[in-house]
Amino acid sequence: TTRAREPITRSRGIVRGQFPSFKMKRMVAWESQLERRACYLFEFSRGVKSFREQPITFKIPFFDKVRRYTPDFELILGTGEIVYVEIKPENKLQDLEVLSFYNNISIQLTREGYRFIVITDKELINHIRERNLIILRGYQQQLLSNYEVEQTINWLKQRAKPIYLKELITFLGSIHKPYTFIAQGLISTDLNNPFSEDTIIDYLKEDDHESYLFACRTAPDFRSRPLSNNKNH
Image (tube, rainbow, N blue to C red):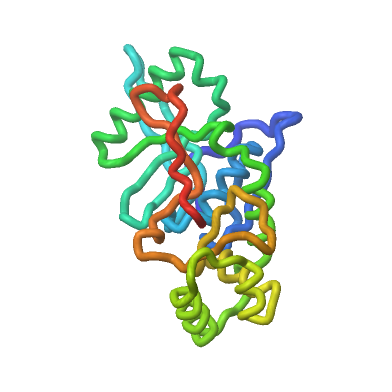
């Protein structure tokens, strides 16, 4: 996949890398630790069907000039909506010129039928969630039979709530299989809590398939802390 913007220089001290995406079947480049964290959230958000980095460059009117702007990511949601994402430290949003420019971006992209969001370090940094996602990465490609999936979902539906991870481990006869179910979006749990035997799990309801693991900020005031839209994984 060709990026619209390549780094101009390999700046000293700036960490860059690549995220091996099972969802995208390729390596996704990131240019900061915040972007790396964003890749994890896009990878495991069921509502995000695909994501790509540095996708396209827009021309944005700003005062008496036209600026070129390349979003950090493009998301295609399960609804078909296309969302362009800027990853930014929250303290950068104190700059009024930055806020004004982002509002112009939002106006322009809305006219073109897209949505523009900003995700900051406040929404991205969650060490418990990150540890959980790192664990789940190891289970994304594990094989599950259709019979296992059908039997497990039926078992979950028939159980009284709450259902604990230790019960599912006993049912499946494996400590690893439940993590495979979670990693592949077949069952849900709250990823903001550490995994334990008492982790509560559930089968996915139909509307759960459009859930997201990240909150975001939108125009007109990107400084307002967003309401979390984290649903159970």
